[in-house]
Every structure is written in structure tokens, then in C-alpha cells.
Length: 354
Image (cartoon, rainbow, N blue to C red; front, side, top):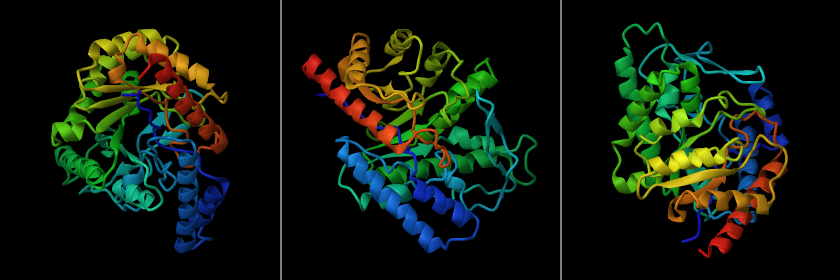
């Protein structure tokens, strides 16, 4: 079987959609006109994805506010002063903070999947945010009449529903975005925080069958945003042994931008279980230079010397615009990198004769 290749998720939004979002937020555009602008961007993104020849596509997250906060849009029990995530270049992102229970998602990911399905017959992959990321919404000081235990029970049920609805709606696979994994080690080198995140996410995953989990994967990267990262300085060797405790069938790991890819691959090879697939990043969304198909091919061949080819897949290191306002990478560059990944994977398959 040929080495499979998949995108991570997001594609930079077109300028027309960004302008429409600004007008809508300022009250200068009706909901109907904004929805029309979103729909136009979605159709264009899917069309461009299909032109790359990608065997699996996404909706490019064109209508998500961000990969992490889509379940929160419209909730009224949030305050803006939540956890702050600093990036290496000095910019920050801030999560909101829960002010009252119960916690429920305002939007589930299947809504994006079903909307995209109207415009393509290609296999569609759907990304969802991890339960562990959303656990950061609960305030450190607690909430009156809504315990952390009750919150985690509600969060677990919502995360299960988020994944279940995508599987039931025909998603080719569901990818749990777990970019806070590496950050957890930076915040707490003891690994206690990371272990608690993995425990919570496994609490969600235990509610799925083995067949379901073969279609569920987890993505980790050092948090690419505006051509910067929040945790690239954390050693993969500390992360991978804990990450691979997650009960999933697919792992999507940032690798193209790693300094020592061979070391990461050797560690992963020791941890990968039979039947699991390791999708390695072969393109770097933060680097503006577009990889050649030959560069991609060589990265795959390097990996195939360490990872059994039946357990190997290819992907991008990260999404190209995880937050809607991230314009650091152009749409043209994103799709050029995707084309190189697809062609480079084809070249590697030919060399490996699979």
C-alpha cells in the first residue's frame, strides 16, 4: 500500500474573507452577507485542495475563528482574561476563562464537516480541539457551585460528542489537535501537567472502539503562529514517551523543522505500536521557502529507513493558519507546499516500489 498523505487542517483565509470578518465584527455587515463570504472562501479552498491531487482534504478551517476556540463562539459564560500563551517572537494568544457552569460547546466540529461535504466527494478529514486544551478554561481559583470535577465531566462528554459526530458524519479520520503537549513540558518540566493532559484525553478516547480509534489521531507541534512557536525549545525525547500513551491509531508529528529528525524518528520507532501510523511532517509552514518534491522525497526515504513503511505517512508540520487572523503565510505558498508534499510522497512511493 502506498504511503498515505494528509494535510493537518488550516489554510490561510483569503483577503476578502478577512475583510468581511472585520466588517462583521464592527457591525458593518449582516450575518447573511458574512455567511455568504465564508461560503465563497470555503468553496474556493476546497476547489484549490482538489486541484493539488490531495487524496484527503480538509475545509481549510475557513469558517473557524481558530483551531482551539471554535466550540466557544457565542458562549456567554466566558471572560476574556484567561490563560496567556507566549510565543518566541514576543506575541501572545489568550484563552478566555469560564465564569459559570455548566460547560457546553456552542459549536461542534461536525457542523464544519457537513458544510464542506456539500462541495466535494473527496475524503474529508476533520480536526477537533483536545479536551486538555479546553480544560485550561477553568479558572485556577475555582467557581462557586461548579466544581472542577463537574467541569471535567461536562468537558469529557462534549469532547466525546465532538469526535463521535464527525465519525458518524463520515469523516475519513478525526485529528485531535494537541499543540499544548509540548508547551505543558515547558510550563512544568516534571511532566505532571503533560501526564494529566494525556490522562484526560485518554478518558475521552476510552469511549471509542478499536475500529473508531483507528480513524482517530493526535497532532503535536510547537504551536506555529505568525511564523513563531511557543515551545520549539522543548526536546521531543521528553514528549514522545508520554505522547505515545494516547490511545489513538494515528500520530501526526511536526518533523520537517526539527534539527535532529533521525533522533526523533528513532525514539518514535521504539514507541509505535503495531497497527499505528506515524504521519511525519515533511513541509514546514513557518519557513517561507517552498520545499521541492525531491526534498520531500528524501525526508520520507530518511524516515523509511527507521519507521516501517506500512506504519509511515506524511503530512505538514502544522496548519498554515491555525488562527483566522494569521496572515504570515500566503494561500499560494500553502498550496505550493501541499503540492510538493503530495508529489514528493509519490516520488518516495516509486523509489520504495509501493
